[in-house]
Length: 177
Image (cartoon, rainbow, N blue to C red; front, side, top):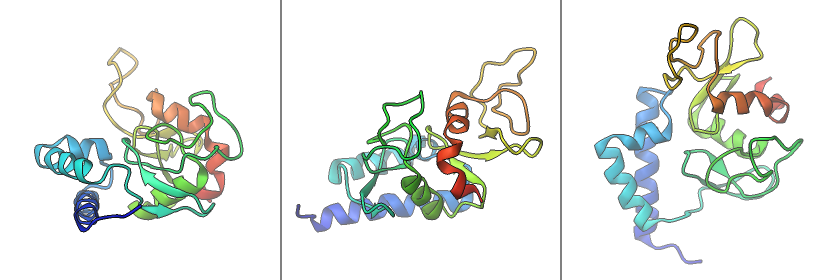
């Protein structure tokens, strides 16, 4: 596979833009970054130039690319256990990722210890109350008498992506310590 200068430039511009946005607000998901007008234009240009570009090799030696959720995926089988929310594969474009690709997510985003990335690409941390339940803090839930619409951030209902992350916690346990 030959990578052209134009492809390298498109991928580099996308990563620079994402890193710049994360430095300003590390709680943004890639989807939120690219939903802005300037981010969407850059994404369209980059996607047209560099479909499925190679970004990194994870610790298992598998090539990992950034999927539509903004997370790294290698396409290999998930390690440790298969969860009920996916097909048992790491990506290839969204959903659950293996621990080696989650490690890339943490490393490349420079996340603090104990923070993971849920299947939607949003940062999620464990509750300060029970240290077991993950919350992303996004306002994406239906508002009810018992729920203010937010996933956590300290207690209360979780979004689907954080529920899935809780189910996968045994896979990522070494990354949390």
